[in-house]
Image (tube, rainbow, N blue to C red):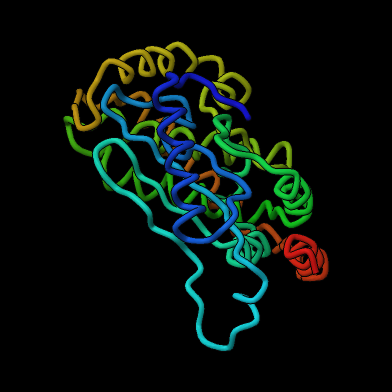
Length: 260
């Protein structure tokens, strides 16, 4: 297991919650990790913990004819946000190259890991699509920019909800692989040198601010963002669909995970 930047009390609490889910839901958790701002590395002092887990049920569950629930929403309060996906749903979304799912899989904060999940994650890399992922990150950046960063006073947290996906787009464009989850790594490797100081100062400010706290709009940063959004919109229009249409390896790893 890998823990980074969490105190022992939180680690223990999350472990207890995962055990509780397994017992009450009669599932096995294959993988559990942090998602959102804490995994991205720019959580506010009052940020909650976004725990995402992947689980599998006994084989008999998947052989039943009625419609099956493929998710578990376990807890949502001021401290914890815990929910999970069934492995069948996960593999279907890997086939679509779901960018959020790749982020869960590559989170720097892992609460639980199994050998079965390691094999699944290895297979999932063969289904990563540059176009599908670029479309996701461009859409996220574009939506947050025009909804939250146009007024004179803006929530600084939203800058990172725009900058991170823009830098993820550049990573995908240049390296053709899932981008790192940590914003610091994306910033170090993908952000232009002339923007480094400005964004680093913003990072330090953000760490001291509450989630909803606002500051004056940063026009230089807005100009940089607009230029990148125009670039990636044009890029997407000329990219070919590179999704992997094959199901065989996903079907195989699903059966292996069920021990059939």
